[in-house]
Amino acid sequence: MNNGNRKLSAGVPSSPCVRNCCLDEQDICLGCFRHLDEIIGWQASSNEEKKATQLNCEKRRQRSS
Image 1 (cartoon, rainbow, N blue to C red):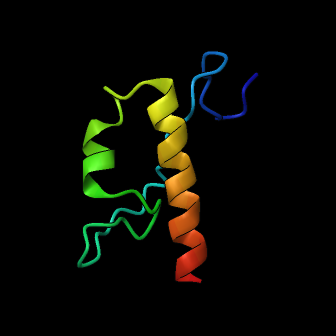
Image 2 (cartoon, rainbow, N blue to C red):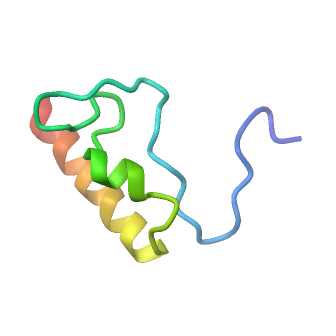
């Protein structure tokens, strides 16, 4: 049983989306800290690009606190 968690293929980065979508004046989501272009391009991104996006999100999150 997965208790409601999304089942992901091994090695595939999960989306940082937290379903709290609201963009700031720089088009950065206040929920997941992705830029609008990163959100739009997520599905077409390679695993390496997704990992880079996740790192960028974490850096943005740390700067915002």
